[in-house]
Length: 113
Image (cartoon, rainbow, N blue to C red; front, side, top):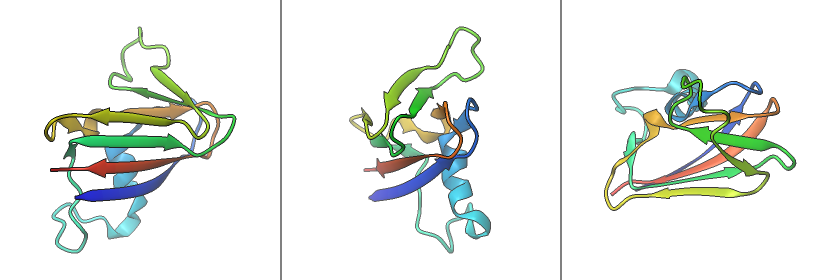
């Protein structure tokens, strides 16, 4: 199963949970039981993220509260970040993203087995 999203990081220098961004993209339609929405797994085998805002840096980490994590992994406008696993081991709830400019957009593509 493949799902694609375009998400907005509304504030600069703020860490956002990827799972929370996905939920917020559905607004009032979000249904945790998925009885009225297509199923969206929180554990996936492939996670692709593309920075859609030229000249802007997007940062990725799994530990946003760690004082020793400066900014995490950095990818600049239109660059792709790819995580793959042999099974559904990538936890979307433990992925956090930040940007240096408000209103930055990212494309997210997930694949689950």
